[in-house]
Length: 477
Image 1 (spheres, one colour):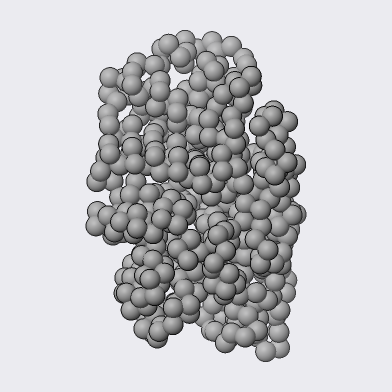
Image 2 (tube, rainbow, N blue to C red):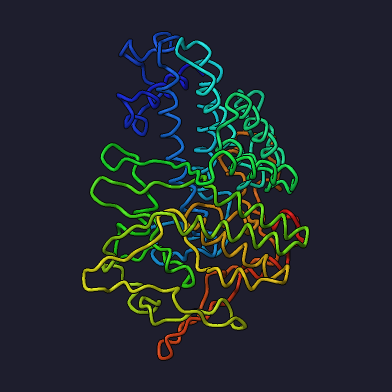
């Protein structure tokens, strides 16, 4: 444990913030300034620890986004540079990427607990707001574990007493406890309330989700929280590499109806796009879904109107994306193309943007974007049509943020490494969980190049609505 803490201390140090990837905790530490005894109790140690926690969060999201976005209908993996198995929902416990994601989440949780137990209590400059932040990081790790995995331990114990894997509900409930503790220490922080709203939504607790969503909006109706990256000092945004930096390799291609939102992340020199892990838009989506669960379409329209107004104020990115080839013409790349969400849906214009603009920039939403306009919202009268719109807007607004995978109800198994080391892992823990109504070709489509029309094979938002009674999806129904 002491050696592990020493490694975390180095990761948390601003002076050594890029050393973690190469650090071997089994080697002796010769710099006395980095020894545990010289850090615990030092003024400002909690602030430095939180910097390390932010870095841990960036590392988690670098692993998380690749798997969850490929494993959803948001993106198709065109090249072989990234995980090839998740695209067809062949999610195996032997997959090294599965092990890495579980390890990264555990690392975020463990380092946060060390900060809570050893660093902050002994820091003469430590305060309640810093303790609340550490609680947020620990809770976030548990939330991700619950949302993404069939089960996952939420503690670190010796090999002689292995941690029992917790169910998704147990992990998310544990996250709720941490978020409530953070909220108690800093009750005016919109992010802690929004984290609670998200967790309660996942649990299907409509009353508490609505309460926390409203409280978050009352504090800050434009709130955002990001994971930041550093192209010069690392870590950089790996998902930006997949979407933009590798250019005409076309690694990951968006579902054509989401083309106007891609690439959400791009790179200019050492500047790396941040990832938005919290934003006020989520509160409005929760409120709208809750009203629809009560069959109040009029009230839901009001929340969606407020949501659209917020989305329309969000920043846009402008950059040259002309190198994007869209797989040699086999995918739509010009604005004349219209897209239908399925063979039974109408064709819509404006979903595909021009990539070859002679050096001119494309404009893509930096935080949130949607194809929905006010007239679409005003026309809503049917509960289920409105619910499909809510899940379309969730898909669009949260694209490239790892959220669609959760909305689809897919769960990743416990990894082989954990199975080999932890006798508490059972045979059911090492199997992925995929709802029976989820097709393995979610991102399939046909492209009539003569007519410039794309037809998506599966309208997955309609699929979710049809199967809303299934416990794995649409929590309020």
